Image (cartoon, rainbow, N blue to C red):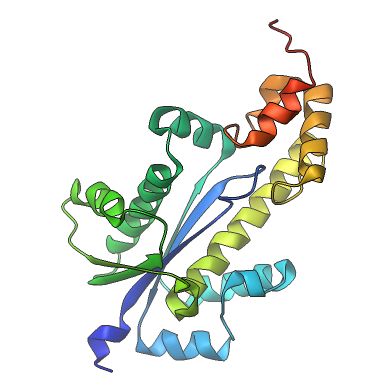
Length: 220
């Protein structure tokens, strides 16, 4: 494989399907040297690694690879979603931002991300800044080491921030979008009022309707 083809940026996100916590997008630059290091560290798709191990691996990846991590906290996320009203566009904006931040520090002609829709959304967001990069979207992109490394950094940041939000609100905020998530949301509304929900949760999820449907709104 020519050296040029090895150099690439992997991009991945975490928190997209989680009601609580931020949306995090990470970009990681990998070359021939760091490729070997990541393989030795057994870097793979974060979904196949325990949370504890993810939190251990992330600092090591950050030490050896140039990277950029964009975290969109729930409040900012709700504000952006209110303007953009489309999750793929919001994701594309985050991908483009992570990519641009990293391209300010490394020069690279190839970026790889998971397939999530129209790649022109990312490229359009980038071209406003005049960036020219080949973006390859793949299904199961996490099988690429650069994307797997990005998935670990994104998940680690998501877990740290979810824990911080849980501590701030004195309620354990579960991952995902399950019945226990709905219960935690109802407790938050009971304890802190409806407004507080928007500081910890992504309000466009169906969960919000279920939670607030059972709770008389103070404004009604």
